[in-house]
Image 1 (cartoon, rainbow, N blue to C red):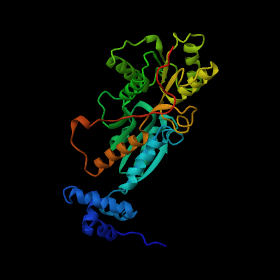
Image 2: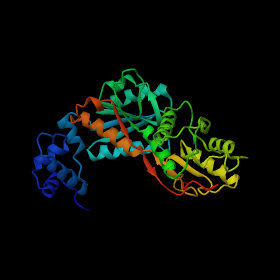
Image 3: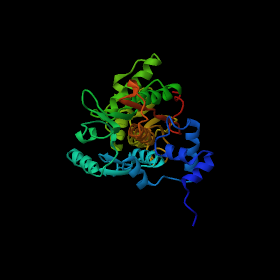
Image 4: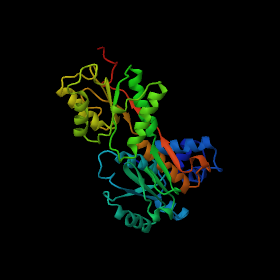
Length: 350
């Protein structure tokens, strides 16, 4: 069996003293160890798969090295669990472990979940939601360093930092992709009216048209919902019985399941994607967008990046590394990413 790496092994590989390794991996490197040396130490620790002894660290620092994560349904969701995965990546790389509790969308369980984690002496808390939404922050989260991921404090004067996707820019870049392909009649199946994300994506769609000096056809914006059947019925209303000149040349969807419904409607009507109709998704949902036929162009939600950014913010606060920048004290917005596949193409000739 291979010998477990020690702090001395890390020091030798990084070309520093053992005390420097201890300072950096205990979160006390800033002001004591040069940044370049800190980077070498972390890289060496990663290469050697070295992590400090958690019990010893806890005794020295009077910390548990445990972060509590509460989610509304992320743990039982096949989708947004990537947020927790990204958060856990960062926690483990910095010598922390995570403990996750899922309330399964029962807000009445929020306070008790937080108290349970506080009773375990967690060093900090994170709340994670499936889908962007406002949160009535449980009072217990104000007792320790805390952060919100994919949600935001619903109070008039937010007290917790939140990390969310940049939905307006995502909507704008999705529409811009279609405009750059020559499309001028772009319909939008915009999701559910009660979703905080939906109007932001609609705003992005409007911004792209405004930047291109194009008027928005309000009749082309439909608050359809989120599911496959909503996409199918929404597309059928626009496409069934319409002549080529009357139907949109592209349909932008507020999520990938809507786009699946649009593709089914197009197949029902004998329309080819993207030859007759370009289809744009949103979310880049695994095993949907990349496995559709044709594969779906989509705007990827940065779920893992949100988790990583939220955990980094939280651990920096716990370890005293947080920057005193008022402009970034409440909100971090993470950009979405355009993933171009086969479902979008040039505007068809008519």
